[in-house]
Image (cartoon, rainbow, N blue to C red; front, side):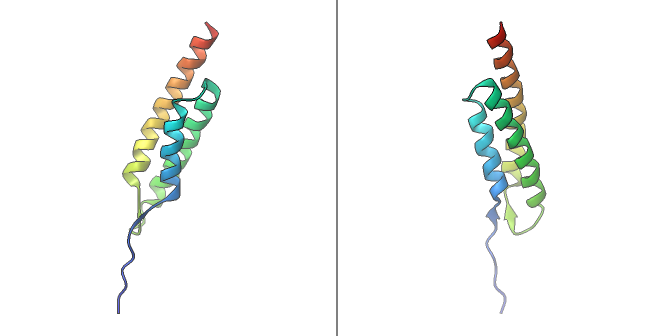
Amino acid sequence: MQTETKARYSIPSILAMVAALVSFVTSAFWGFILAMVAIVFGVLGVLLSLSPSVRGGLVSVVSLVAGGIGVVVAVIKAISGVL
């Protein structure tokens, strides 16, 4: 008897997306930190999604892009705060 396991999203891919989204609405410092967290968890999520029982590869890639944009936004916020 063969049992099938349902593919599930990985926790790092979900955390990466949340961190990326929150990085846009915080200060420059915390935005930068959360964007970096999103990038780290995004990479981890991509690596975990290589397993057939784990979903979230696309979510992780989107969070990597959002994390990169979050870094840029944080730098712009920091520069505009100084001027």
